Amino acid sequence: MAKPQILDHSNAQSLWQVWQKTAQTYPDVVALHDPHAKPAVKLTFRDLLNQIAQFGAGLRSLGIEFQDKVALIADNSPRWFVADQGILAIGAVDATRSSQAERQELLYILEHSDSVALVAENLATYKKLLPELSQLPLRTVILLSDEPAPEGGYNFNQVLERGKEQNLGNPPITRKTLATLIYTSGTSGNPKGVMLSHGNLLYQITTAPEVIKNRPIEAGKKALSILPTWHSYERSFEYFSLAQGATQVYTNLRSIKKDLTTFKPEYMVAVPRLWESIYEGIQKNLREQPARKQKLVQFFLKLSDRYIKAKRTWQKLDLYNLNPTVGQRLTAGITALSLWLLHKLGDALVYRKIRAATGGNFQFIVSGGGSIAEHLEDFYEIIGVEILGGYGLTETSPITHVRRPWRNLRYADGQPLLGTETRIVDPESRQNLPYGQQGLILIRGPQVMQGYYKNESATAKAIDPEGWFDTGDLGWMTPQGDLIITGRAKDTIVLTNGENIEPLAIENACLRSKYIDQIMLVGQDQKFLGALIVPNLTALEAEQLIPANSQLREVQDLLNSDKIRNLYREELLREVKNRAGYRPDDRIGNFAFLPEPFSSENGMMTQTFKVKRSVVMKHYEALIASLYQS
Image (cartoon, rainbow, N blue to C red; front, side):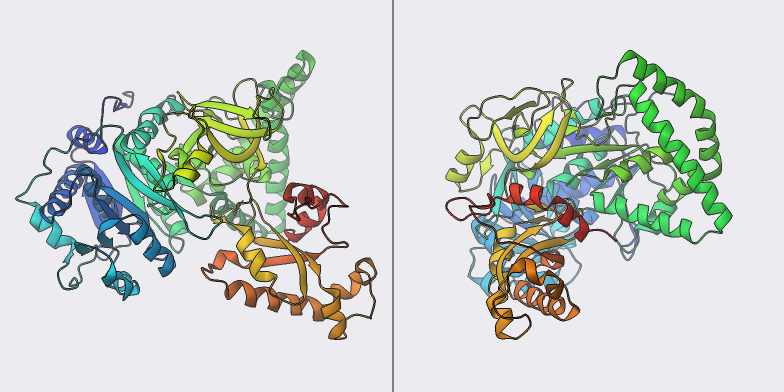
């Protein structure tokens, strides 16, 4: 079998040059496939290159110039990709966001980005932004749908038609040219525009092949796309896989289980919540099997769990024992060897059928946007699905670290991409810390953003004069360069679906309830937000829900009565939903009452009355864990 060809894009100065080379190499390979569009859409790389050129030339004919900003407010589809790359091909800059985002956030992005044109998902998206939209200095509005455009505007096909007899011009694009603005949530309420250049994005395309050099992406193999295509995580992987000739198949939450078995993809990136959902579906199916079959499955799973853990020790890939003794390695090696045949039998009888629920063809899958639970790592390794965990942020385009197939250190977040530097420093002194010691993670490399758009102070705070980017995350490194994320130095909570939640604004909203004295949100790497609540005993006494002059520790049982818990559930729901910018992920799924208030005396508050989140989380670790137990 011929070795897969790896396309070298290291000399490219723009993404347009990448698509030219890929289309020249694989003109008839399907690039984009949307089976859920009506009618279904398939574009070969030749088709894709032509449409990108026509869309870009059409924009140019409408007066969009080099480095003009164009708001791209739309969702996953082949037309999104055509619009994105058409904008970039003429050297313009797209400011991206989902059409499902809250209208005030979209209007802020449109105004703040200085966009001179709007490319919208459809007419409904355009109307959602009225009447304020008419007050912005837009030169044109373009709909990605086939609907009649508003007066003076165009739909997708009309822009393509305009571009047929035009060309892209000769925009002076270099790797330093700004390509896109991706807006991230901010603690102040207004999102910040992350400035990513063509070089930032090209770095991901040109360094990713090294990560999988022993199993490179092959032309025509399928990558299933489900994450928001406008965000840096899915977007960079799409750019990389397409740059190697892969076929991107679009799916959605309603269709993913069917699409996995129908299209049998070889590659996919997603957040931990998706891998958890697939795992839960498999477990549900197993529970419905006859008792004898369940016992057989559990027998093999327990045996294979011993096998993979022994193998990790033998290979020096046990995160909790990275330097096993000679005796430990020999014992582990003998154990793994003795269990190998039974593990293979388990694969033939059980795991192969389980893999079928994922399509059965995965060469690898990538998990990011939060830490994946250890039991999920173990399960997918047992059934033979390779998860390459990674780390990164929007500000780093996004990938900085990722695990390699030949060094897949489970529970870790991988080694750096080529050319990426990592420091673990003391948060206060910024002095380097030794291997194995937790500290603040700093990153320097070609993927680090140019800065925050029109926000020099935030940029200076994030990137020091030597180019080191402050990730705001805590972690430690192994001597081999593996990064292990342990927490967040900043307050942002990342749920398993990849959504970033800024807790302070939600906490402030909850404090509007007369029944809440103090509150702290939790939920890092969980499905939903949880809350630790110090109740206002005076308010509860006034309603005669607890005896007068009670102390917190004395009324814990009363607080956990259905009547009081239902009261707090209603209070939290009302106040959170009434908050400006409310999103469904802001809802608090479970909560617990604390036996004492946060205070400087017990070490849970600073002298300026700020909650020490890391101290509270460590102190109430077991209580927080109980919020997420089934």
